Length: 125
Image (cartoon, rainbow, N blue to C red; front, side):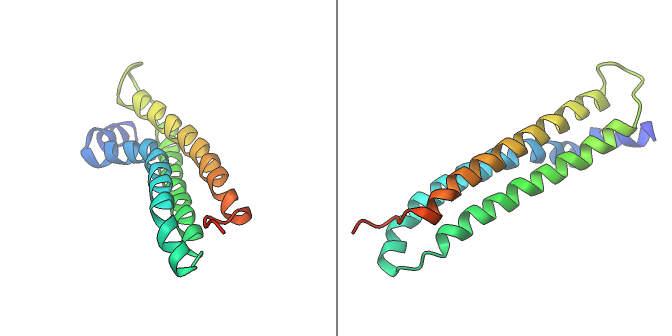
């Protein structure tokens, strides 16, 4: 199982999933922030406030998918034993752990950004 796991994380697809686990949360946060600001004026004109809730929900889904990817990689790398201390599997295990922590942090941040949408109105009266 060690050789298969090491080969999987040597390939571009395995490395790509590790990076997706790390970067999905920050990218979702930035998209949520930018799209929320961009949509305020059109939402005030049309009075369709649903988009103010769809954007953070999509950001949460993207962040959660990054967390699921990191969790799966964490499990895969934790079950396999590496012969080298600084090899592919320990590096991949570390990257998966960072992805888990990053995803958890940005889920909290996106929820904190979403809460004012329930309480405040974006339009001035």
